[in-house]
Length: 225
Image (cartoon, rainbow, N blue to C red; front, side):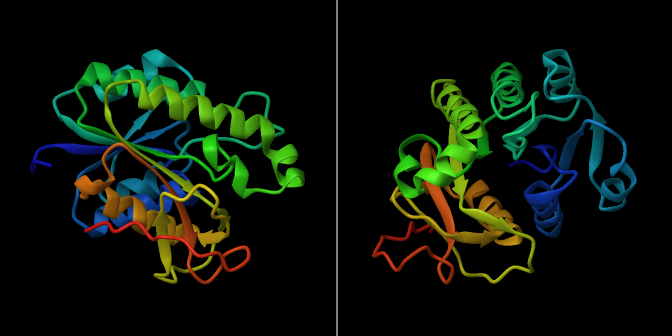
């Protein structure tokens, strides 16, 4: 990316998105974050992040946030909801972000999805799939919309998420059968690495901690370099 362009981050207020915000700033990248409320605005601004208020579920908000004097080089989205939520952003919110990115001439879009979406449905037990089905259906629809958008994309499907410090054991794989746990901080590290890796262009990758797999399956790790 150029020195004048920004990374546009949706979902920076908490979880994986907050970890990604920290990672991007450590790399001294310019970040513009879309926030639905100003609850975490001051914290992000203290990190040197440009904050714009808007709801990903509102297409006008998203398009307005991506317009402006600062060109957007890439978009990263971690937005989503819980299965019990009635108004999840997993599909509609991400669809709005993807469509706005196309209009804004963005180069690359990284979507943080979930193991269990798409062909990785084979990785999870029937009980887990039943509990997460509404979310996973929406996440798969968002994935497919991104793939068909014409944008350069990377889709990262993390396993079960934990809020522990990074272990540095996070790995990516194209094998859809793999499942396990991973810390949010490690997902963020992988996302930031994918941002600068052409090898991840137009790839769908599962993300797990190599020491927290379900079972001990043999699989091929994806080489980012």
